[in-house]
Image (cartoon, rainbow, N blue to C red; front, side, top):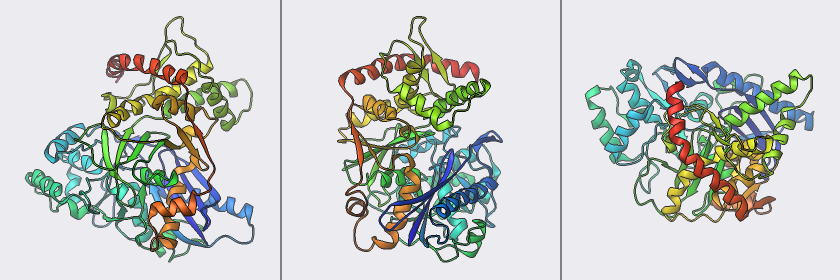
Length: 518
């Protein structure tokens, strides 16, 4: 028996098959990118299942290479996806608007109003922020909404017919009630009063998915769902599903960070930190999202819209040069070389970089505009450039995390995963320098989400009735997992602090340049 985890991330759709012991048997992937569609960051609806089929074909090829005559029997499937944003369907399951992803930042007015009337931080990325902003903008499709969902919920619904969502992803649609596994009833009532002048034919709760905890039944693969997966005769109707989850929740599972006082960092297209809390914060902060672990514990989330985009852009520039020179260097070789250069930790002397491809609410930047500046005498070579790239990717995160430090949130170490940590050890060193905390990379650090949701599928079938999610991860999965722990020295930490001083000073200029070039 085996278990399949699928994650629809921002730049890749990934799939992994794991054994009953949590060992990765094979992986597959498909690259995709969001596009500007009608003015919004979105993905084409048809590409969702085209990419999913391509991913599964890649996975099947990898499995066949290992065992040509016998594919493993899949016992349970899990779907993970990028959190936030929204997909709106009508009563006939037809799309009413573009899939408005977390990357869109046009919902400031809705976010501010909802934060005020609901007395909580209501981020611009959250699904109901998109719903309310559409009303404020006079978009008529809102009256026809029958189901409002995230990406993981949508794919799960298409494959199973079950309109459900794991509590971690649901917490990025609308606030969860204290000590409950449901949307906050009081805030829902307040929201319905706020929306009353629009005379909508529904109450908001009725269009949101039903919330499930990790381990609960979440349906099975339908005949229609099996057809959507294409040439996958080994994925036949009847396979069980675990609750779909967001990439934040599956990242926590993949790094074994579901107990209070644990924290993890996910770094890829975006970058965010998750801290499982012993108790709530003293007050709402617009920089901090309050979400949940897949089994319902409160989590403080520091989410930055910009992560590795600018690193990828420079890598593409260097690859263009390499090819024009008639050379052949693989992308993996290129990234390994770039990250090795970044790991040299040269003294910071004025090479300042902002990686803002999109807006960055944490630092108050409303429009994205990458910016590179340097003093005339600054060191300008590959090591200095790549160090600034890594520091820039972490700067906004560090600024948000300072709030949790002031709140007295205790985290002994940070467990990290994502593409930022796949090449060399530069990402690990930079994160430790940025936070002055030990950074732990687990064995599967590069593929957090797909692995995490596969573990949730395994937990759903084999362990949910007998132990907690945290005990399952501690005793059955991570008890003997190899890890790499690193704590930056004083010199490296000071180097980042020097960079951060200039970074804060330059934010006003970054805002002005963004406005000028918009």
